[in-house]
Length: 242
Image (cartoon, rainbow, N blue to C red):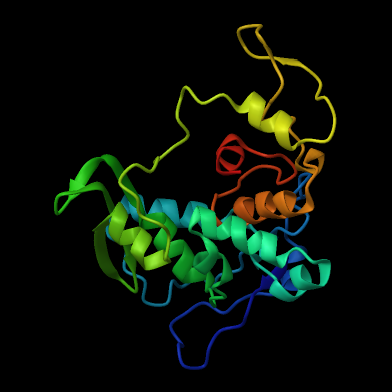
């Protein structure tokens, strides 16, 4: 899987310059397992013209600045072609409606990412102009508001009237996990003492047999779902999409 992390553009002087991993490693905390590629953001003391909407926005921005982040990862077509996996991967992504989104290689800037994340608000029960979900955020000190459909259109993600906003509560992950893993999995017990095959805390992605499906899981973990834990496990949302 490819990585992209670039320096500050000369045409956009107001953006924070991208920092190298070497320059930030001296002050970085000890990396936890599964975050070996993480690095500390090194932003200038000044926010370079960033206007906070309120105190809560500023507090969240400063909190995000102290967190570890990972380099952007994206679909690497040439590697997949060499391995003979690209056609299968293309088919799976087309079924999910994520092919265009996965193949986009966009330049990112630390300050803009933090401005977006620190101001992002999602009201799953709200509506905007008659469409479900009310989403708002700030970019370049400008407030934006839209529905989930509009947000998906920006990212070239699929829109379907019967799509799920989250994993259905009644969906059982055990059959799906057994169907894609190589050997009989160890039986775990949930908090109620009931036996289960899939445990999101111990479901290793390396147990997935098919290399294309394993690559797809890693792709989903890096470009679709936000990760704040080990990337060595397959989470329930990723398994549901698989």
